[in-house]
Image 1 (cartoon, rainbow, N blue to C red):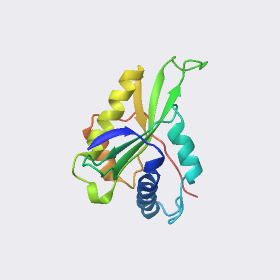
Image 2: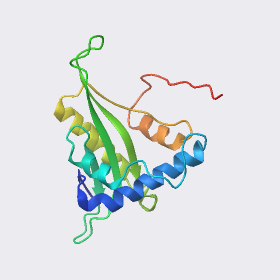
Image 3: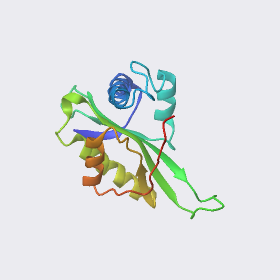
Length: 159
Protein backbone atom coordinates (compact mmCIF):
# COMPACT_ATOMS: atom_id res chain seq x y z
CA UNK A 1 0.00 0.00 0.00
CA UNK A 2 1.16 3.52 -0.70
CA UNK A 3 -0.31 6.89 0.12
CA UNK A 4 -0.33 9.86 -2.25
CA UNK A 5 -2.38 12.89 -3.24
CA UNK A 6 -5.64 12.04 -4.95
CA UNK A 7 -5.99 12.66 -8.66
CA UNK A 8 -8.52 12.24 -11.44
CA UNK A 9 -7.80 8.51 -11.73
CA UNK A 10 -8.99 8.09 -8.12
CA UNK A 11 -12.40 9.65 -8.73
CA UNK A 12 -14.39 6.41 -8.84
CA UNK A 13 -12.70 4.97 -5.73
CA UNK A 14 -13.13 8.15 -3.72
CA UNK A 15 -16.75 8.45 -4.84
CA UNK A 16 -17.37 4.89 -3.57
CA UNK A 17 -15.76 5.67 -0.21
CA UNK A 18 -17.79 8.85 0.20
CA UNK A 19 -20.95 6.81 -0.39
CA UNK A 20 -19.90 4.39 2.34
CA UNK A 21 -19.27 7.24 4.79
CA UNK A 22 -22.60 8.83 3.94
CA UNK A 23 -24.47 5.60 4.62
CA UNK A 24 -22.82 5.22 8.04
CA UNK A 25 -23.88 8.75 8.93
CA UNK A 26 -27.37 8.32 7.42
CA UNK A 27 -27.92 5.21 9.53
CA UNK A 28 -26.64 6.92 12.66
CA UNK A 29 -28.33 10.29 12.11
CA UNK A 30 -31.18 9.92 9.60
CA UNK A 31 -32.53 13.25 10.82
CA UNK A 32 -29.46 14.97 9.31
CA UNK A 33 -28.11 12.80 6.48
CA UNK A 34 -30.01 11.63 3.39
CA UNK A 35 -29.06 8.12 2.23
CA UNK A 36 -28.18 7.60 -1.40
CA UNK A 37 -27.03 11.20 -1.92
CA UNK A 38 -23.61 12.66 -2.67
CA UNK A 39 -21.52 15.13 -0.70
CA UNK A 40 -19.67 16.35 -3.81
CA UNK A 41 -20.21 16.26 -7.56
CA UNK A 42 -17.39 14.90 -9.72
CA UNK A 43 -16.52 18.46 -10.73
CA UNK A 44 -16.30 19.51 -7.07
CA UNK A 45 -14.11 16.50 -6.26
CA UNK A 46 -11.71 17.29 -9.09
CA UNK A 47 -11.47 20.90 -7.92
CA UNK A 48 -10.76 19.73 -4.37
CA UNK A 49 -8.08 17.29 -5.60
CA UNK A 50 -6.32 20.22 -7.31
CA UNK A 51 -6.57 22.58 -4.32
CA UNK A 52 -3.42 22.67 -2.17
CA UNK A 53 -5.43 24.19 0.68
CA UNK A 54 -7.69 21.10 0.69
CA UNK A 55 -5.36 18.13 0.16
CA UNK A 56 -6.93 14.71 -0.28
CA UNK A 57 -4.73 11.68 0.29
CA UNK A 58 -5.54 8.20 -0.94
CA UNK A 59 -4.17 4.85 0.17
CA UNK A 60 -3.88 2.64 -2.90
CA UNK A 61 -2.91 -0.94 -3.59
CA UNK A 62 0.77 -1.31 -4.27
CA UNK A 63 0.54 -4.31 -6.59
CA UNK A 64 1.60 -3.70 -10.20
CA UNK A 65 -1.35 -2.63 -12.33
CA UNK A 66 -3.50 -2.29 -9.23
CA UNK A 67 -4.07 1.15 -7.76
CA UNK A 68 -7.47 0.42 -6.21
CA UNK A 69 -8.32 3.10 -3.66
CA UNK A 70 -8.35 1.49 -0.21
CA UNK A 71 -9.02 4.63 1.77
CA UNK A 72 -8.92 8.41 1.73
CA UNK A 73 -8.27 11.39 3.99
CA UNK A 74 -9.85 14.75 3.11
CA UNK A 75 -8.01 17.62 4.79
CA UNK A 76 -8.27 21.40 4.94
CA UNK A 77 -5.51 23.84 5.84
CA UNK A 78 -6.83 26.41 8.29
CA UNK A 79 -4.59 29.46 8.44
CA UNK A 80 -5.32 31.57 11.51
CA UNK A 81 -2.32 33.87 11.12
CA UNK A 82 -4.62 36.74 10.14
CA UNK A 83 -7.10 36.23 12.98
CA UNK A 84 -7.92 39.05 15.37
CA UNK A 85 -8.61 36.82 18.36
CA UNK A 86 -6.87 33.48 17.77
CA UNK A 87 -3.20 32.68 18.06
CA UNK A 88 -1.45 33.01 14.67
CA UNK A 89 -1.21 29.32 13.86
CA UNK A 90 -1.80 27.01 10.93
CA UNK A 91 -3.95 23.98 11.66
CA UNK A 92 -4.83 20.97 9.53
CA UNK A 93 -8.48 19.95 9.78
CA UNK A 94 -9.35 16.39 8.76
CA UNK A 95 -12.79 16.48 7.20
CA UNK A 96 -13.02 12.76 6.52
CA UNK A 97 -11.03 9.55 6.79
CA UNK A 98 -12.64 6.49 5.29
CA UNK A 99 -11.40 2.98 4.55
CA UNK A 100 -13.22 0.74 2.10
CA UNK A 101 -15.28 -1.83 3.99
CA UNK A 102 -13.33 -4.63 2.25
CA UNK A 103 -10.01 -3.21 3.48
CA UNK A 104 -10.78 -2.43 7.10
CA UNK A 105 -8.69 -3.77 10.00
CA UNK A 106 -5.61 -3.99 7.78
CA UNK A 107 -3.82 -0.84 8.95
CA UNK A 108 -5.09 1.44 6.17
CA UNK A 109 -6.64 4.03 8.49
CA UNK A 110 -3.55 4.06 10.70
CA UNK A 111 -1.30 4.59 7.68
CA UNK A 112 -3.52 7.40 6.38
CA UNK A 113 -3.66 9.07 9.79
CA UNK A 114 0.12 8.88 10.21
CA UNK A 115 0.57 10.32 6.72
CA UNK A 116 -1.72 13.23 7.60
CA UNK A 117 0.25 13.87 10.81
CA UNK A 118 3.56 13.80 8.91
CA UNK A 119 2.14 16.16 6.26
CA UNK A 120 0.95 18.57 8.97
CA UNK A 121 4.36 18.50 10.64
CA UNK A 122 6.09 19.20 7.33
CA UNK A 123 3.80 22.21 6.85
CA UNK A 124 4.64 23.47 10.32
CA UNK A 125 1.08 23.09 11.57
CA UNK A 126 0.37 23.67 15.24
CA UNK A 127 -2.21 20.88 15.41
CA UNK A 128 -4.50 18.49 13.56
CA UNK A 129 -8.21 18.63 14.31
CA UNK A 130 -11.32 16.74 13.26
CA UNK A 131 -14.93 16.17 14.21
CA UNK A 132 -16.34 12.73 14.94
CA UNK A 133 -20.04 11.92 15.05
CA UNK A 134 -21.28 10.36 18.28
CA UNK A 135 -23.15 7.80 16.19
CA UNK A 136 -19.76 6.41 15.10
CA UNK A 137 -18.09 5.16 18.32
CA UNK A 138 -15.63 3.02 16.35
CA UNK A 139 -14.22 6.10 14.67
CA UNK A 140 -13.92 7.91 17.98
CA UNK A 141 -12.10 4.95 19.53
CA UNK A 142 -9.72 4.85 16.55
CA UNK A 143 -8.87 8.56 16.82
CA UNK A 144 -8.35 8.31 20.56
CA UNK A 145 -6.06 5.32 20.01
CA UNK A 146 -4.07 7.48 17.57
CA UNK A 147 -3.50 9.97 20.38
CA UNK A 148 -6.22 12.53 19.75
CA UNK A 149 -8.05 14.14 22.65
CA UNK A 150 -11.09 16.37 22.96
CA UNK A 151 -10.44 20.00 21.99
CA UNK A 152 -14.04 21.21 22.21
CA UNK A 153 -17.50 19.69 22.37
CA UNK A 154 -20.39 20.50 20.05
CA UNK A 155 -23.75 20.13 21.75
CA UNK A 156 -27.21 20.11 20.24
CA UNK A 157 -30.84 20.07 21.24
CA UNK A 158 -33.03 18.49 18.59
CA UNK A 159 -36.36 20.26 18.40
